[in-house]
Image 1 (tube, rainbow, N blue to C red):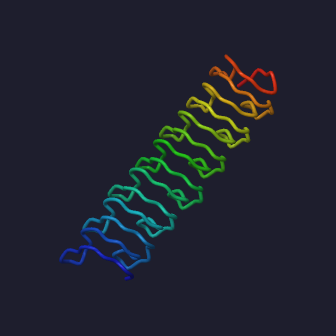
Image 2: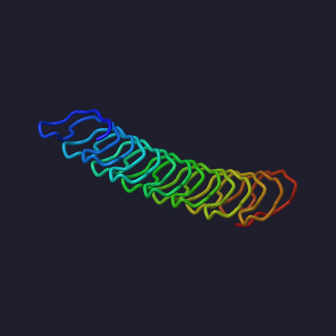
Image 3: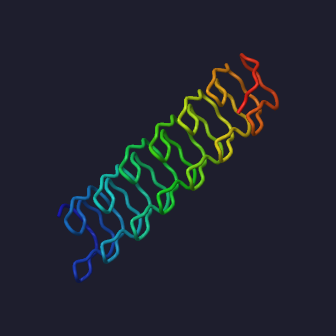
Length: 196
C-alpha cells in the first residue's frame, strides 16, 4: 500500500487526515496529503502530483470541494487537463476558470503569451492592468504597460516600442483615449498618432 497515516473507522475506511503514496484502493497516487470523508473522497486542502483519479497534474496546492474540484487559490506547472502551461498562480472557480489575479507565461488555453500580469474576469478576459510582450491574441507587441478594457483595448497610460498594431513606433509614453489616440503629454523618438 505504500506509506500512509491517518484515521479509519471500524470498517477500515478513511475518515480523517492522511498522507501517502497510494489511495484507499492501493492505486499509485504519488505524494499527497489532505482530508477525506468516510467514502475516501477528498474534503479539504491537499497538495501533490496527481488528482483523485490518479492523473498526472504536476505540483499544485489548494482547497477543493467534495467533487474534487478546485475551489480557491492554486499554483502549478500544468492545467487541470495535465497540459503544460508554464508557471501560474491565481484564483479559480469550481469549473477551473480563472476568477482573479494571475501572472504567468501562458493564457488559460495554454498558448504562449509571453510574460504578463493582471486581472481577468470569469471568462478569462483581461479586466485591468497588465504589462508584457504580446497582446491577448499572442501577437508580438513589444513592451508596454497600461490599462485595458474587457476587450483588451488600451484605456489609459502606457509606454512602449510599438503601437497596438505591432508597428515599430520608437519609444514613447503618454495618455491615450479608449480609441488608442494620444490625448496628453508624451516624449520619444517619433512623433506619431496611434490608431486602434
